[in-house]
Length: 336
Image (cartoon, rainbow, N blue to C red; front, top):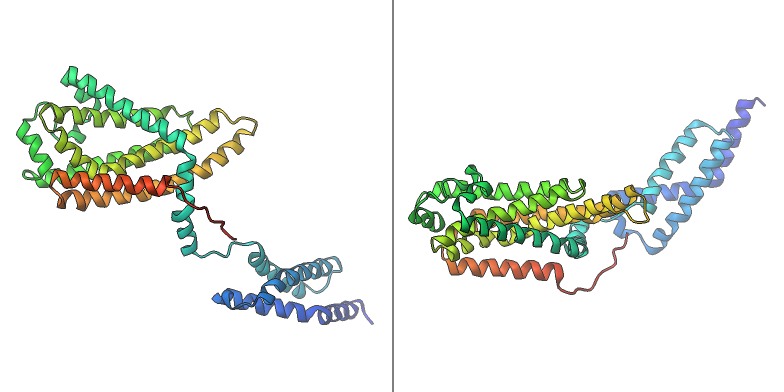
């Protein structure tokens, strides 16, 4: 008997001794991959890891004894399919999205509470400093608010012109353009505050301060004309969500920057990766908040012109976000 015939005989005997297990594993993988995972019985699910290990063992023997390449290829493919069943995540896209909104995002935001307080304090500080400077000297307004953002709503504008921009009675198209520009401005600040956090937090801090200063300068201008209450309603109907998103983006940037600057006992790369997981989840939610703020800006503010009602909507969004992120909840364990 030739060496080739001997090898083929060994391969056939090897296959016959184990082929039933391979075929069973293959049928179970076919069933699972066709979307029928829920139809697998408990016995079948428990059998898959055992069959998988048996197949891996057979693959190892086949490689060591140089059995025919066709059998080795078959076992490699079957082992790879079973590996993803045993070790891979079997959650659907809907499951992942549900887990993100139900637990992952709120948990990430709660984990950033210290950075959130710092970010919020910096924004408030920027607003107070700008308000003080503009109230003392109106020309400071131009240092904090670029011309394309003010759109003529500056100290040179009349009180009636400023009032008309709040109630929509005048220059409605210009108001819409200004509102869209303001939203885009805040969204850019939020994304940059996160993206530049790695630079030891300094760009993030400056951006958050600047955003607060812009708001402080605007409010001081309108308040000096007796329009502070009206401006508050005009801004906050969407600003509660939008500004909170900026604060959270700043907090995420601070988490990254602090990990770079102070990694502790861990390697700096490990510290940054760990911080990035929490910050990244929080930023994924910030994008959702900005989209929601855009809807409020595009529809709510244009349709709701009563100042009192605007404050009601603003308060409702504040309660909504506060309860969603910080209300006590029972954590659920995610099964992979």
